[in-house]
Image (cartoon, rainbow, N blue to C red; front, side, top):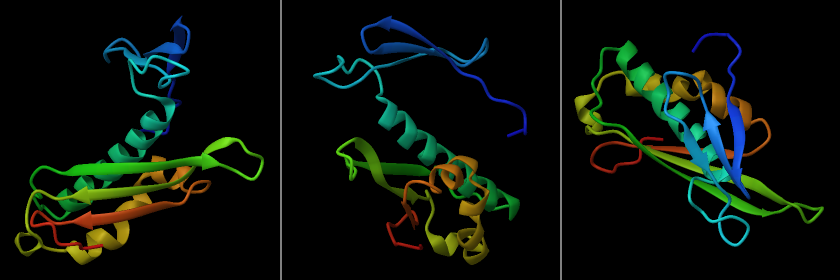
Length: 148
């Protein structure tokens, strides 16, 4: 990603539904609050935040592996965002947990120790969000063995 400014335009469609416009070449997305506030016809802001963290971690892991010319198979990621009340009684994202899974067993990949030690530090979104919200990261290989 470049150092350039990133812009997203949000336009209210109906009640709590907003159309997210990322620019000419990217399809627009409908975001919505869950029931009872909204209708749940699109991802919520919390889901969008969690998906941004997961996408950035997945891309960083893939990039780090490919730097060593490794082909990890398809990478997947599950992100759980814990929403609760802060000391002032306001709803906040209290923590997140991301579990990434490689498509290949660890034994088929080289330099995993170096990759696992560094990939998170290159994740722009996770490092930014993680300054305010604790984010736990786990990495599993293709056999489900926890590597980190």
